[in-house]
Image (cartoon, rainbow, N blue to C red; front, top):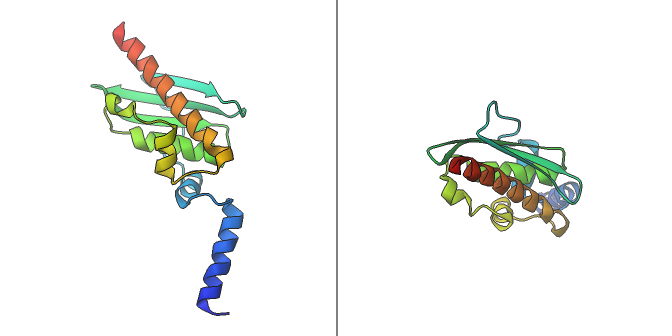
Length: 141
């Protein structure tokens, strides 16, 4: 078996193992970014998605900038990847800029997901936006 054939077999095996998920989705699931809770977050949100997965987002905001963010989920691999992606995209950014983080931008950041997993990106985006709304409401008081 030559090197070309070996590479093709390894690629086929990896596709079978990962279900065709992008390298970034697999990496974020295996090495989640910003996973866990934050002590004394400024704002917090929790949503249970239609598939039964729950996601939480914890924010620390100073001067209208996200200085720290984390997530937790009881969901699957793609839920972890989407939560990680949302936090990576938001950390260090001004709140106003973070409004653009949505299902599409998370999917783009991850290099896509299978159609039956795209709802995980929506769950991450919705949970993140709910936490941002809690911050905006609290700021107006």
